[in-house]
Image (cartoon, rainbow, N blue to C red; front, top):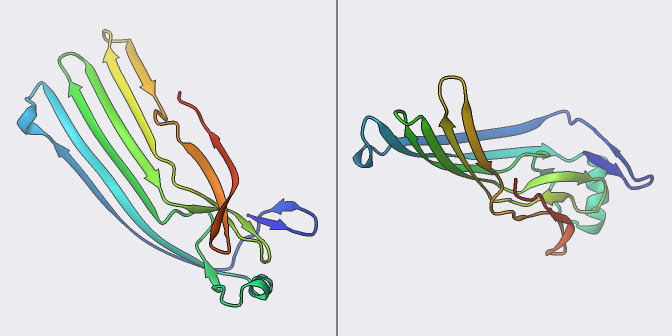
Length: 177
């Protein structure tokens, strides 16, 4: 996603090549020592590490290096977080037709806006999300659900860094649902 400084136009531009590597570890464990065959507790999560890199266009790099001669010739891929973490804790009781779980997730900073020239790119900062849901079967054909999403209601921030100082590009709250 790029901006053209001369006319403030937003446009898409694909790059010719990118490098991306990643690894994911996932764990799920039934907590049998605190449950029996009719009800069960479980705990789990996954974590991903992602390395991404794209080469900055030579003309753009020249403009960047006019104000920062030591600027790197590469940057992370647009929209790609370097890590993602998900954790959950759940309870299920088949005889009651009841289940509940709470989950947490966060993803690392990622480029939200690639800005042409020497203006710093804008990054979406990590957002900690906590969700909760309950399900109850009410006979064979009906089910009742309760969900609470984004319980922490954190501030969502997009920032850019100039001369080692972070500046807010925009910030807001999504609200609890």
